[in-house]
Image (tube, rainbow, N blue to C red; front, side, top):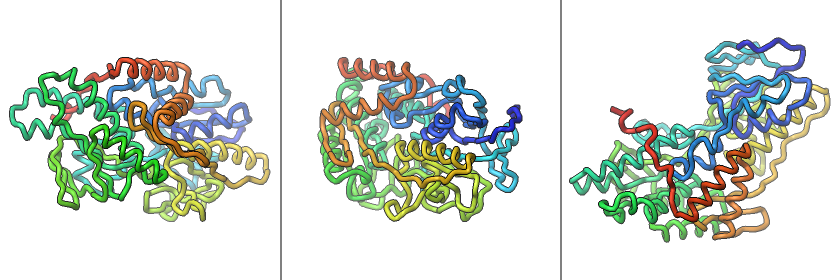
Length: 426
């Protein structure tokens, strides 16, 4: 890997997401060597992936170069690679570009889509966990309408204009709202020779309410917003199979859709090499203690989506969202410093700052610890929080200007087929 040898302790961080960057930033200007490993050379702001998928933002506005986050720090190194396995008995990680020793290892690999073993849905459905996947969805949406223009079979045309979103969490709800706004104000202008009214947007949720992790009021209001936007909300319904056209469910309601977007589950992106006792089955995360140490490993830590820190308050670990990841990362960095200095480390205590979701123009729901509200004000709060959380002044400025332009013009001008999706399947 061509990493210089050093007398300083070496901290290796796997993953440049919210958790990994939080650790790296807190360890700056110390007598440490920090090595950041990631399979991408950029950090992705995942909460806005759905806007890339629906033509509201270009991908470079929600991505930030990882090297730029560390290029002004001493003893910091970045390598573009995929970690294959951890060798805990040797204090090494094996990657696609070689092997690297560590004194302390931080696993912050995030999460990946969980299809719960359904191979057909994995094969024919779409997922949205990365920028390339969001671009695939954007291309597919537009390609479907271009194909619908040429289709003479009415049933096939309807299938091309039908969208099934499986999962009623924040990702599914926000994506459905964005598609509904496209149907309302953009697609009729782009395709005047198509009856856009026949376009159907379906959100299928297996439980009895949307946004299950938020308050009942937020769930009810989100559903109300979606229904008013023309979205079909199906609750207590599970998708069992999908063959690229037919959506099979456990109820009487069946669907025909060329596009199925799976937002119904995630699991930790674990790495090989650690004992089976270190991993819990659902949703496949590393089991860690209150100090973020992986079970039976003194110098290996896991944080963020890939870690399950179980407690009486959080029996299944913390939610797989940005805030727990960031807070765990900052806390772990402080504990690593204490370990090196032979000081007593402190257990992690999560401070819940609330959760939120947007359902479209002037529509959002916000749950704060002591205040829950919905509507226009919630929408402005959602925008401010997400703008503030973006990395880099340029990204903040570009996203803000895009939002202002889209709001005034009621338009999404990045609905471009830059990388055709269907052609790659032939």
